[in-house]
Amino acid sequence: MAKTKRIDFKEKVTGSQEPSNVEGSFNDIDFDLLTSQLSKEDRDLLKNLGITDTEQFGQFLMMAGIDPDKAYKQAHLAESSDEFAVSDIMLDDDDPRGEFFRSMMEEERNSLGKVFFLDSDEVKEYHIRIKLKNSPVKIWRELKVPSNISLELLAAFLIEAMGWDNSHLHQFRKKDDYYVSREDLEEYDDPFGLGFSFARCRHHDASKFSISDVLLAKGDKIEFEYDFGDCWMHELWVKGIRDYERGEKPRVELIKGQGQCPPEDCGGVWGYEDLLEIRQKKRKSSEDKERLEWYYMDDKDFDPDYFDLEDNKENIYGMWEEVKVLMAREKKSGKK
Image 1: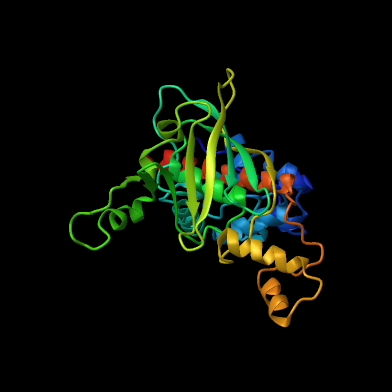
Image 2 (image 1 turned 90 degrees about the vertical axis):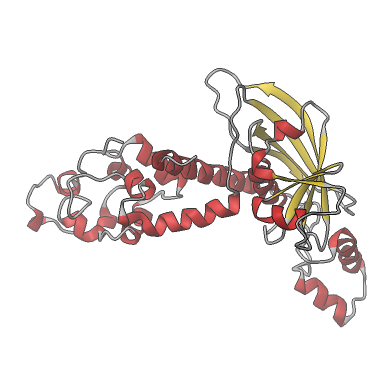
């Protein structure tokens, strides 16, 4: 990867080439002016990281072991180099300055799954709808996803879109076929450590199957279960499949939704229904009030039908940008 040219802060800010005459601090630099000398790849990477002003960029540099004020006064970013590239710090495993960020990315990578996309000769756009089954109120979401997205990554997006905390196990189910995370696969196949299983159902590694492997046509359905204790059962089906236009890049996008996510660990749909009934009581016992407060449903303005589409679209967009950053790192390091 070609590095960008040296960023000469002092020349841009003061017009002088004498470091001793530099006054002020790194935060005095205009962010647009600062990033204008970075490569487009680096600017996109900063945006994906949520870095949108000079102060945030300075914090990024400090975490990377670079004193921004000192670098500013020395008229370039890296103390020991005349070249600097954000992508090198973030994505290069051999650059010690980015170790902190790479550890954070690795943690995020684990939460999203081991495989993002599967090889495919032709990638199409899937318009899908997921709804919470047997819910006392309508709770559903609609998304657009690439046909080669792994079920493992799809699960992460579904959990985010629905509003769950991602603190419980989950699985896809289609008749006797179950698609689970790679880490849980062995336990499912041999729960008693006998070397075999008596179960009629078949368990598969969700990272090895894409949505187009299990849902072939419009109208096809699959179940998605979240939290095996509360058993939140969802139904997912394909509303449409289309070809991408020339030049159109595949991505994950939330487009519609209704109803806010129930509270975690409330006893499933029946427990949630009970809580909604308690809210309707004119006279509530102290125990009723405690239950509602525990599940953050005691606010008089609580509306189970409410869904902030724009806020949730931003969450899915941010998650997609994280995936892009992680994919860029893996491409740079040669990982599959």
